[in-house]
Each structure stands twice: as structure tokens, then as C-alpha cells.
Length: 253
Ligand SMILES: [Ca+2]
Ligand SMILES: [Ca+2]
Ligand SMILES: [Ca+2]
Image (cartoon, rainbow, N blue to C red; front, side, top):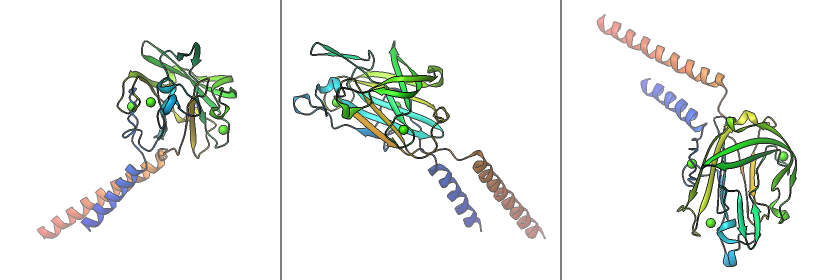
């Protein structure tokens, strides 16, 4: 009987653990084989002539990692790119190019309902969440959307956790600097989300490189599930105690 109880408890605990995946550490370091494993898209780097697909420009325009992970009702997002996210600009060939907004699609169609606008000041990022009515296309239309056109601010930076860093990272095989943004916010802020997959997208105004990723949220079970689990465990413990007491009495008798 004891073994049976241990088996039941172990099963319940492993079920509880399996239903929630681990959190992302919002520290401005994109650990693609740890915290972001299975929850990101990765680019194939810089090709010959600086090709990053669909355009050119080398490491300065290379989008390296884009992550999206929803766990325990928290939405985590992460972006690593050779594009300077600190200034939001890259000067190249006499022109200035601009970083786009982070686009979020919550209903599986082609339109991104939400946009996250970011800026970095003194190494600290700030984020704002908007509901979007229309987007501006990049030069390479295949990389659309680029920037929010018509949008309403829903939540300012106080609703976000965020971190930024720049430097040379081992997960960039092309050499040169990369720029990393990580952030998190509460899933309830995406009021239009009704279940299913959530998509994330990022590019710059030329659209020379782009990444897209879709994730299936692992939402924390309702509190009632935990109450049920808790009372079941308490019941088992009480039953064990009664068994022990009974055994002791039997032995004394
Ligand atoms: Ca991290
Ligand atoms: Ca949509
Ligand atoms: Ca790269």
C-alpha cells in the first residue's frame, strides 16, 4: 500500500511539473539552448556577399534569434540581431535604416493585432504595448510588417520586465556585435487572445532580414486544479497517519 501511495504522489507531482515549462531569465542574454530551447526561431547567419535573406547587408542586418514563450500566464519575448537595437538605427551605404516594432499575432490569421515598441536608454530598455489597426510595410514586402502605422497605446513600460545587452556572443557565428532584448509581461494584457498559438515577428524598415516564430502557450492550471491537488495530497497524508496509528495500536494490543 505504501508503494502505491508513493506512486500516486510521484505521478501527481510529475503531472504538475510537466504542465508548466520553465521561465525565461530576463537578463539580456539569449540562451538558445537553455531558457529558449524549443521556443525560438534561429536564422542561418550571413551568406556570401552579405546575404541575409531576402536582402543583403551582412551582420549589421542579420536577425539571429527571435523567441516567444508563454508559461505560468507570463509572456516572454526575446530578440537577438546584428542590427543596433540600442540606437534603433544602422547607417549603411549613405542611408539610415530603422528598427521595426515587435509584432504579435494572437488569432492565427495573417494580421498582427499587437505591437511592442521599444527604446533603449543608458542600457535599459523600455517597452509599450499597442493594439494595432494598420502596419507599414518594409521595402521587401515579404518581410511585412515593419512598423505600427495606426495603433492605440494599451500598456506603458511599468507593465513590463525588460533587459538589454550588446556585445560579442558565442551564439553568433558571423563575428561582430549582436544586440539583445528580452522582456516579459502578463498574458492578460493580450485581451484578444482566446487560445491557440501566438506568433511573433520582427524586421527593420528595409526588411533585409526577418524572423517569425509561433508558440503554443503553456498556461498555468486554474487555481481550482491546485486546490483539488492539494486536498487530495492532504487526504493521503491523513490516511497514512491513521494507518500508522492503527498499526501502533495493533502492536500494543
Ligand atoms: Ca535570458
Ligand atoms: Ca491576427
Ligand atoms: Ca549573425
